[in-house]
Length: 273
Image (tube, rainbow, N blue to C red):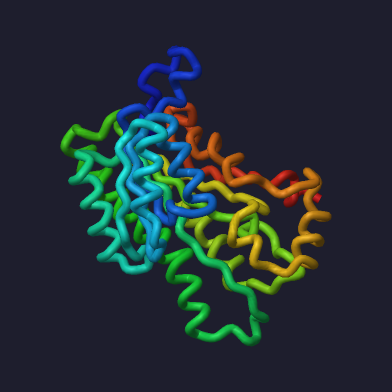
């Protein structure tokens, strides 16, 4: 097994971050962190397939992003927890764009309830989206990359898979009770590490674990929770979703050509004390 080398490591450093001509797909790419990721990859030069489940403005988001960046963007409705569905979607993306280089498995949900009251239905839904969805998205991407590698058409010899995990993968948040969410994200991080070893011949696999990001997912919680979280972050604030853009471009680009199986924690120091 050999990790694909950087095509020109001595090139000027800013060129290492370019995604010009690449094709990327982002699940959950219409809102919050996913929208910031879609925007970042487009701004770095990639053509972007924005994959969504139920957002009503997905086509408008794709059109607006194309106008702002000059790249091709398209919206695709899919369901990540359904293996056949997300597989067909990514295969269609590769067909429509002529290739696929980068896949960000970002779709996720959160819920809170005491573990002793967790129902089979709510547990299954959490794992279905956060863990199964991540696996089926990555698997579909890997098979596209593997086929392209065998055909000699995988540029640079490696595709790129990035998982959106969470700091909840490495600690237990308080005061909310969310054992199912925490377990799903911890599993995603270890899945990332496992796949990075298995697929090293044709894909790099990494994860990003954000801390408290100021999105709709965070704003729905009680103010007393938000105040407590705020006090627990050494950085003294929550993050704007766009502050994650550089990290995703870094992992998607040749700037991280020797990085695989990593979990980048971006949390304002929250997990340190």
